[in-house]
Image (cartoon, rainbow, N blue to C red; front, side, top):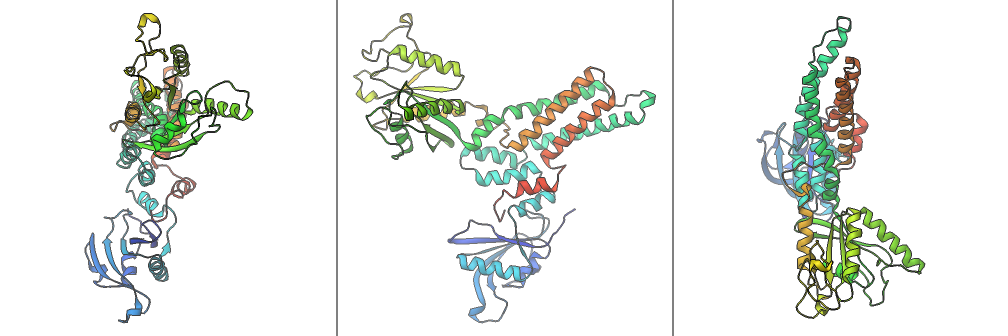
Length: 478
């Protein structure tokens, strides 16, 4: 059943001066209300999904030019064939802030209320246009600033994992009804819900839920960017590399070791993936108090990073030093790239990738010499901005993550993670109870929890506080 609430109005396009602005009106009587200020065709008699040119006018609907606010194009969407499933009118006018204010004032004078943040999407959800996961994805689509985050948001907007979870939840409801029926016949020791079938269903649901839970770390990276920390010894060229990647003078560059003493961050997009680049203080032992704090912060950033770029000076770094750093990076468990800098200052031929060298001789040492480095080395010249191979390596490294693959359902929302985790825990307790032959009342208790958590995830079980919290984060007009 479609619920047409009181009409609301808001600017649907970004605020500010532009060529065109779009004002959206939705709710009971939205078309008739707009008709009172629109001079052109009678909107109420027009088919849905049609656009009509005319003028939008002040209260005095005479023919004088002073009564006209603007020439507009009005598009009519009749219930239920609209975004909110209510009657909707979209008024396209010139993008003057004055004109927008005048039209909104006229609409409110006629009885419309100014929409709250997310109120249009909230009405669409309440009218069954989509579930709560899809509703939240609307905001994510709007906020998407990379190809990866756009793909993830669009997947959820189109149903993503929520449709499958709803189907499994319905099957679980059917079993819970049988378990509850057993409780009504507790004294007769009957079993309506076959325990092997119930157990199979619960493990099937966990088989869907657990990969989604595991995807959150990668999903968070997609939504917020890949935290990529650039580390190395002082004067390895970290700040120069940051400037080259960003194509701007973001960090101070100096021949004096220890110039960078704090963390410098900025963002870079490579092949549709957002990287949060973090330049850090050089790693070395120091008696300088401020520099020591910078080194400590570098260690902290390594812990938080999803990817580490270890930059070393190709002129002065020895194989032993490089191997020691490789061992430390391997022990950290963090994905990393080895990047040799200042190749422009190294005599030809330049070292090939994958082989560590005595950086003062460049003799091709063998594995028997004990200096083979299994991770390929990317040789660059940060000063000359010869960094294309590094950009390609960063993109390739990010795309090896399953979350970057378009076919994978990914959780990017902390609320979703919370409900999925609680569902999995409740089902684990219920499975253990079934295996132990526990009575139906204990099994039913955990099944109810699982159903509630799944319902709150998709919006089949909601509270006013939950909806207020979710939709208040949307922009006005959406």
